[in-house]
Every structure is written in C-alpha cells, then in structure tokens.
Length: 383
Ligand code: GDP
Ligand code: MN
Image 1 (cartoon, rainbow, N blue to C red):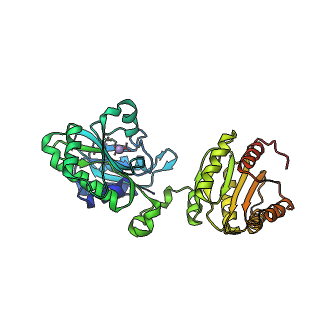
Image 2: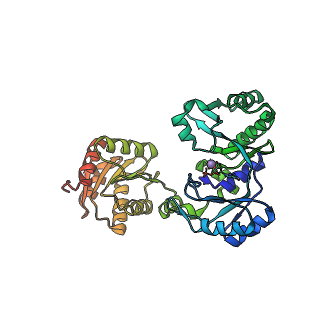
Image 3: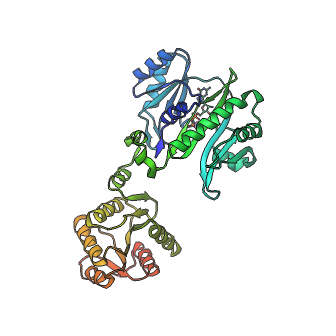
C-alpha cells in the first residue's frame, strides 16, 4: 500500500525528521485558508500516488493566499497519469540550496535493509542509477544491530555533506530508519531532502510503501488507504481477499497458490503467450471465490482465453470442477477455456468438465495446458 506524500511526511515528522508544517486541502478555499495561516509564499502540491508530479504541472509556488487559491483550483482540476487530483498539500515554500536523496528499501539478496543516499537528489533515483550510478552511496543495515552513528557519518561524508550538517543528517537518517522499521515499510524515501538557506535539513518530499501483509497490526496505517486511488478491479480483489495483479497479456490465469501462479505465468510466456494477470485464488477454491475471480479476469477486455490451473491437494478436484461450473453458470464467459486439474479425484473432475456444455479443453500437464491456452488465445483451438 502506497501512502501519499502528506501522509508519509507526517509519519516522518513523528520520528523526528524535520518536515514543512503544511496541511491538506480539497478545495481552493481551503487552500487559501491554509496559505493565510502559513503567511508567506507557499508551494501547492497535488497528492496523487504517481511520480513526476512536477513535470505534469502538479507542483506550483504561490506568493499570496489569493494566488494559492487560484493555483489550487488549477491543480485540483488536473488529471495526472490518469488519476484525478482530489487533494493538494499546501506547504510553506522552502528556500532550497541543495537537493539530496535519502531512501531505504529491502535488499533481498543481502536479506537486510539498505539505506541509499545521493547528492543528486530531486530527480528520480532510477534516473540517477542509470546515468550516474556512482553518485548513489549504499549502506546495509544489520537489523539486529540497527543503524549506528558511524554509519550515517560515513554516508554523510560519502555524499559530500558539509560537516556542520552531519549531526542533523544522523537524526534524519535514524528517524527515517525507525519509521521504515516500525511501520513495516518496504520503502521509505525522502526526495529531495533539502539543505535550506538557513543551513538546515528539511524533508520536502516523502514517499512510503507499506507491506500489505503487515497492515493487520497497524490499524492506524491501514485506515490511511486512499480508496479513491484504487481501481475498481483492485478493490474487488482486495475485498474478496484475492491476490490479483492485472498485466497486459491475453491469457487470463486462474490458479490456486502463489508459486503455482508464477510458474503458470512463466510457462505461458515460454510457449509464446502473455498472461493477462497474476491471480492466486488461495486454498479451497470455493465456487463463489472462483466466480469473483472469473469476473475479475473477464472484466479485462484484453483476455482472449482463460487458463485454470488448479492443484487439488486437500480440496478435491471433483469439487473444484463443480465450483468452476457454478461460477461459469453465473458469469457465462464467451472466451475459450483450458482447464488443468491435478490431484485428488482428478479423473472425476475432468469428466465433470468434459461433460459440461462450455467451450472447455482439459489438460493433464502444465506444458500441455499452457500450449492449449496459447493456441486458444489465438483463436485456433478446437474445443
Ligand atoms: P515529485 O516531482 O513528485 O517528486 O515532487 P517533489 O516534492 O519532489 O518536488 C519536485 C521538485 O519541486 C523538488 O525537487 C524541488 O526542486 C521543487 N520543490 C518542491 N517543493 C518546493 C518548495 O517548497 N520550494 C521550492 N523552491 N521548490 C520546491
Ligand atoms: Mn520527489
């Protein structure tokens, strides 16, 4: 789950990171009132969960409250990368001398968090990594030891930060790390962390991505989810407790188990097809879940064939087959389907499907199923 800039910065602020004391508005009038309270030049920033807001006209300076109102009206009417702007953050304008990048992600290969800093802040870090990778300094953090002062000192020196700012930098880095850890984040980023004209550090932008699997123990963070930013498909999937990621291929994949789902996508690709989604319907494969999942898959207009790949372990394949038929009676898809059922009572499961009136091919191996699905998506499978 991604947090908005204003949410991320509030959290960073709670961990001692200096952040601008701004506020969020949903109307131009509110924006004006906040600017009046701040009293001085402000920056009006669109709150959408995509990057590159500046380039899209979503970040503008305003000298007076009246100008803040006008600018907010314009930004609130924008759509940035397909997302309508519903909120703007009004922050006191910062007097920026230097822009630094500071972020933490999990380095899976090293099995620990890695803190990254760069003197080339303000632009996307992926861009820095591409054109000037040596400008990104990395520091691995041993979670049992934590982040030590000598490490942040090394990082401050490595990015050429003036000696007078090293203590402040340590506070920012420690705060960011604690926020990352305690919120179960997979990413916490300040870009830019600026050196102001007053010679202090200020987190002008903030970004956090939280681990969805940890939200159950952070109800206050879970409540920050912005339902407006979710697509209807993502919402349906989340509410039905399905792991669903839409992709841009033609073969809809309905699979039980995340590992099996990934293997199914790989092998589909291997045989020249492209999966339309990742979907893990989980254990049990009850008819209502199958129906919800099928509806999600078929709502995607790119889908030209559906591949069911179900492993019947504890669940019996004949039950799964009946579940699929119930779902089909409800959803009535008009694309060809390929079903691979393996495990307990698989022969009975296949017989039930073969005797149904739906356009459905069955397969015993995954390779056979994938090849049939690829052929079906091309409209060349006789079923
Ligand atoms: P992003 O483009 O979505 O990452 O948004 P940022 O919050 O990082 O802002 C982009 C850029 O706008 C920053 O790198 C700054 O150069 C500039 N900017 C943002 N806030 C201020 C501000 O308060 N004052 C000034 N002068 N520039 C700002
Ligand atoms: Mn930024």
